[in-house]
Image (tube, rainbow, N blue to C red; front, side, top):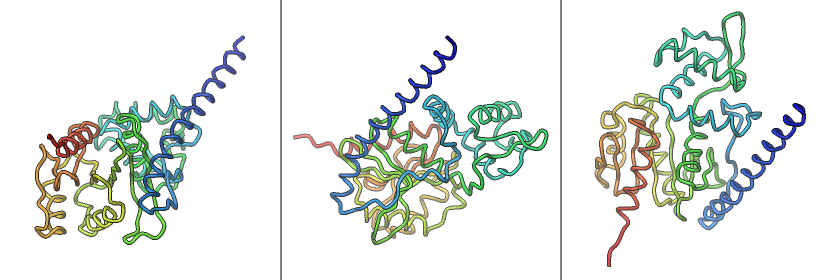
Length: 281
């Protein structure tokens, strides 16, 4: 009986995965068509080689990981795991969390086979070498659009023969309108003016209805990032504060950080965009 129950669970998991894939494929077809109508041909999308996630995760495990990724402390913790991926202990990962939290996060990563025990009390990352947290963060933001805003999204997108080139971190289709999000896992001090210029150039190529420059930090945008945009735009467009550390340019380009909640901030941006587009006759 126990074997039959286990087999039934495996079949249910396989069915759930198949249905989810069909749903995502149906939604992403609409996104692909929209990009095609702009004359854009996708060369690459949704890469998995640069993710911290193993390909063997079940849907329930992916849900668990997504839930953890909503926490800023967990995202900072993963950055430290990647930085020390060859060998680390709990005490090495306490820059942004307590020892107790670090041990709890390690236990969680072990349960998903993201890390493994290594050399007595040490651990190491399974999918290595992994060069940055960027790919996993892009995956997460694409998941945010799909799960929280119920729209198709793709990440790590590269097109053939665009003027400015480069990767588009996340592209979503919300109510028939394209949303392009540039995702930065580096702190503001590591972001330079050329990255802002590249983001604005890719925005020109894609022509989305709105674009978001998202820095996964709780630091102020006004100190470093906003001046970079002001320097690049050279007074052709004004950078205005939306609320707290969220800024906008003509209610179509947004500068966003993670404080107090990354999902709430994206929701605020989408609300502002749609409100600014309203016309009353």
